[in-house]
Amino acid sequence: MINFREEIIKILDEKIDGLDAKEIDKMIEVPPNYELGDFAFPVFSLAKIYRKNPAMIAEELAGQIDSKYFEKVENKNAYLNFYINKSILTEEILKETVNKKEDFGKSEIGKGKNIVLDYSSTNIAKPFHIGHIRSTVIGDSLKRIFNFLGYKTVAVNHLGDYGTQFGMLIYAYKTWGNKEEIENDPIPELLKLYVKVNEVAEKDAEVKEECRYWFKELENKNEEAVKIWKWFREISLKEFNRVYDMLDIHFDSYNGESFYSDMLPDVIKEIRDKNLLEESQGAEIINLEKYDLPPAIIVKSDGTSIYLTRDIAAAKYREENYKPDQIIYVVATQQSLHFKQLRAVLKEMGEDFWDKINHVAFGMVSLEDGTLSTRRGKVVYLEDVLNKATDKVREILDAREEEQGQKIENKEELAQTVGIGAIKFQELFNGRIKDYTFNWDKTLSFEGETGPYVQYVHARICSLLKKGDFDINNEIDPSLLTEESEINIIRSLYNFTDVVVDACEKYEPYFITRYTVELAKNFNKFYNQTQILVDDEKLKNTRLMLCYAVKNVIASGLNLLGIKAPEKM
Ligand code: ARG
Image (cartoon, rainbow, N blue to C red; front, side, top):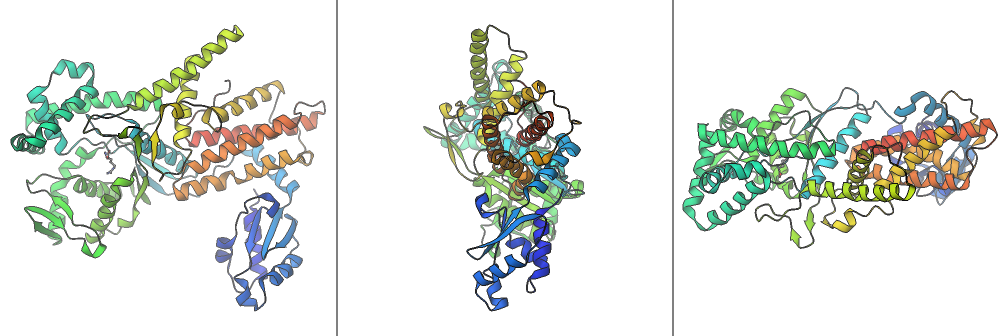
């Protein structure tokens, strides 16, 4: 497809002496509305080179540019505004639609590059709660975005399946636990034990010591400790996998923290041999003063290992085994310090891949009556949220069946697709960093700019294509698409890949969420204003081709968010 931006760079590179193509590329902007053109180039910085006032330079340049790709180039407030030739654009988009079909917009810019994505990373024996939805859904979307752009990805669920809390749980189970009760309702029962042992250990130093002892025993591979721990892990994963299945989110690796436990002695030895360890109150630490960071504890005073040390081992393992270009950690902002320390420690160790460590942070989810806290047992289970959303859609579908006196095909599947899609869509509607408060009503409201709205437009187009006997081989004439609503759609389709690239570079799936809503709205405008199934065969087929293009891009956009696009709704 013609790259209009590249054309602008070529033109300006030829005309302007003081700037090279790269600099020009960086300066090109996309104006906030099409009245100001499809692209704009600020001329201010040329004033120095030309020793003339910017408006004059812009005026002169505008007069000199003559390219078939642009219907006009204008000076507006010292910006050169480029207006793409709409008939060339329309022709290009429709040609691309025929050639690429469902793959419209895909790119190969990431070819040959590997990305490790560490996300979801739930904790064994603890609830898979609403707080985890962010990492899970953002991480999955990033994986899809990278793949769409040709990158290879390794999706890792760095399970929290190791650490002092397992000493606590083993102690609690041995002291108060009941096997049968746990098997019947694993996570809530384990959570009860966890809450109780936290309460008791807080007041009773002896119990605290016992808990420490049991984690040490686990690290020493004491048979009893390992057996109980394995069982916790198994029953928890079974619960989690039910939720992952509902979400249709899966991983290439479930190597959690415990996976690295055998590598820890070597890692610690390496750090020690490099003379990086200092003793501090019985623990062994790395001083990170020169990074303006608090010291990193590598070995605790009781000799047991720690979250950070396991992450050092994990990073080295990933570097060695996956040869990644980036290792992305989709983890809450609360852990910023942890990842800063991880980078600094790797740098201190002389690992030149330290700067591949990339913490993609996100804000907190809290509950209306305070923060989520597993330690105090205050949680909203993600599974409940997904079930409620599905129930609500099912009710709507039931009512519709009643009203129309007609059964809906695959009702259950549709209820899940729409209900869970709505949750994901809402989750990916805003930037990552903002904190938010979970609210049942808001979560279950499907009004306005929501997943169901976009899914519905997709289904509507599918039925339109059927009704109009759409065939990809039908003869079309791009020059027939001249209505403003049609041109708006064409422009939007042209931007699709750029939006995905932008989302990828900034790790912000919400760019795509917003884009799909805009495209769906643009389509509805067109649909309401224009008769699509007209008598004139060529016009009808051309408009249907436009619809088909929109359908593909909406489906791709939703797919990049991990949301299914139903053909009927
Ligand atoms: N399990 C951790 C938590 O729930 C997140 C792990 C993130 N990944 C990592 N490699 N540290 O807080």
